Image (cartoon, rainbow, N blue to C red):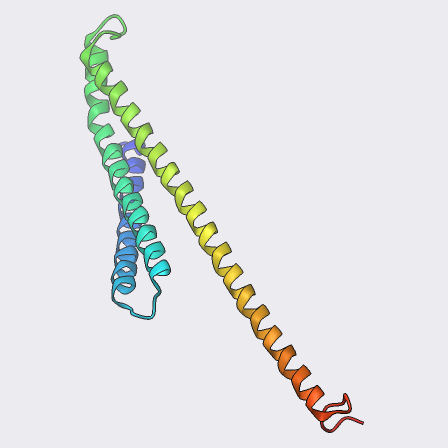
Length: 165
């Protein structure tokens, strides 16, 4: 086994391990979001969509790992064809297979990037929505406190609160 094969196997093992950890975490999130009654419908929908996107990402990570391992076998075939031919194998079937293989691998990587972008945007929108809600709740609390203090001040009749001189 040469260095390239060892690196490919380590990368594939790392991708599969990361995918397993992500999948486990997202399945737990799905379970909690469906069973916990304290989670509102908007948050439940967000968590469900987020978990679905991330599970798909984990699946695509496994596909990339499989493509890495598959490349090790396909590369051996390509090398065997190269050794048998005198001219470059531009019309040979293996060239078309390798080209299709890498086009598919690039499409999977592109899909992973698109999903990551969607996840980033969805998380940003969720954060802005919650920050706005927290700000509105804080403003409402402050307004009620100001109103309460004004009512208390005006009920004393002299414009001073109890204990002030």
